[in-house]
Each structure stands twice: as C-alpha cells, then as structure tokens.
Amino acid sequence: MATPNDYRAIARRTDRPMWIWAGCALTSVLLMFGVGIFVAITLLNKDDTGAEAKLPEVWPSKPENALRPVPMPTGEMVAALTDETAAQVLCQAIPERRWEEILGDRTLREAGRACHAVTTQLDVSAQMIPALPEDTSRGAPVKTTVAGKLALIAADKDGTRLSVELVEVAPHNGASPVLLVSFRGRTIDTPETESKARALAEALIAGAMPPGPSLPKIGEDGEIAPQQVEAGPLKDKPLPVMSWLLCGELGRALGVPADKAKPTFFASCVLNGVTADYSEYSAVVSPTTTIAGLPAQVDERGVIVQLTDDPDGKTLKFKGTGDLQALAEKMVPPLLGR
Image (cartoon, rainbow, N blue to C red; front, side, top):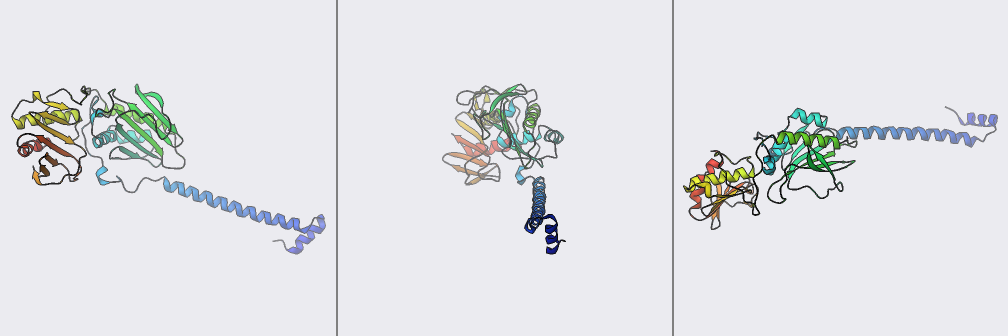
C-alpha cells in the first residue's frame, strides 16, 4: 500500500499536486464500495424474487375448497350451474396435465366461488358470470372471438382478463352464460398471459360444453316449460334440472300429476298452491325442529330445512297450504339422494 511519502515522491516526479493523487485513491475506494453495495442489492433482489416464486405450502387454501367428484355438464348446461359446482366443473373440465401444459408449470387448483389455480409465476381464476363486463380494472376491453364465440379481452403488463359469451341469453335471468378467465403475475417478471388466457378458455369451453341440451327458454318471470326427469338428488345439478326434480317430488308427495307444475329457472317449482325452492345461499336458519334428521325452522311463513352444517348455506324452503312439515319429510330424503 502506498504511504504519504510515496505520494510526495510521485507528485515531485510528475509535477502534480499530492492532493490529486490522494483524490484518485479515495475515488477508487468509493467506487469499489459502491460496486459491493450494488452486487449485494442485486443478490438480495434475486433472493426475494426466488422467495416469491414458490407454490403455496398449504393447499387448498381452505379445506372446503378441495376438488371433489362432480358430474360434468353437457351442451349449454354449464351456464346453469351454481357457483361452487361451476367452479368444480371448470377446475376439472380438462386434466391436470393439460392445465400444466397451458400454464407452463406445475399447477395447483382449488374451487370456491371460482376455480382458482396457481403456479410459481401465475395466479389464475375461471368462473361463470351473468354477463360480459362493460369495463374492467385493466381498462376498456377489446372485442375478439374465442372458439368462435364473442369475447372481450383486457390486458396489460400485470395480466389479462378474458370474458367469453358461451350462450346468448338475456342478462339477469338467472343464468351465468359468460366464462371469465383472469390471469395475473405472482412474480416481478410476469410471463406473457394473453395467449395463455386464450388457450385456457378454449380448452375449458371444449371440456365443459360437449354436445348436449340447450338451456330451456326462460320467460319474463323466470318460468320454464315442465319436463320429466329421472328422480335423483339435487346436488350439482343445473338449476332447471333442480326445478324439474322439485316438481317431480312435489307431485309424488302430494299424490297429483306433476304435468301441471310450474317450474322456474331458479331451482323452484309451484304445484297445487305449494312452492318448493332450493337456495344455494340462504338467510340464517334458526332451527325449531328437525326434518329428515336435519335442522329445520318451522313457523307461520313455512318450512326451511338446513342442508349443510352452515346455518346460512344451502336450504330447501316450502311454503303454501297444507301440512308443509309432513310434505318436507317426504320430499327431502330423495332430493338428498337418500
């Protein structure tokens, strides 16, 4: 290392002031210090990015969001499923391997109100919604087509929202005819998402809409034509099929033909002055008795049977004339598949 005497000697030989050489030495030290800080910050940022690029340690995020076996719809009936059933269907409409091919990485899936999937880099959701959006948080969407169907897409550096109209029906009639696929990044360097959103939407449409029935024509008040269907449980059925099942059980419980029943698209049926109605999300039930072994509220307004452990979850409601409690005792077991 140079000493003060060395710098004086150099200064004499070069006729340059000693303070210039001292300044050069100080500048070199500062530059080396700055490079060291830059390298440290770069490494820390790299470590932070790597820490973000991991799959969640706990999955599904809630136990009730785990995938479970569900019947796959056909035709246009995917537009008539309840939210949770539709989420389960969309998560399982294509195999896990196909999800990973499209998203480009190992993929975890869960189903709540929407199908939710994550990779180390992407957070993805797919769900059925009532109508094409007019705008989105990513700005005004652009018209396009996906699988030959009208679609709207909005994309930016953070991700993509793609909405595809699977069935042309009037909005707000109880159906959810639009597939919404949303992509956003989980890391600093978000991969390209628009092409992935299109590929996923096309795959889900093919998987969830194989050839099958059309939605029934829906009247102004939600009414649909009666139809005979094989008796069975309500669980995971499309809403109009639930209505036809309710009509069939009402007829059997009342001992009258069900051909005069009045079903609606909204999982309800009226026959001989009695209404049977299924609700996916209900007001809180305050049990006063049990029906078919399930908590039930019986009062002057009718009978509400709580179908799950959640008091504000799925319910069957009965109102009208006659002994509704006895009617419910007859109808609930077959509607639950017992």
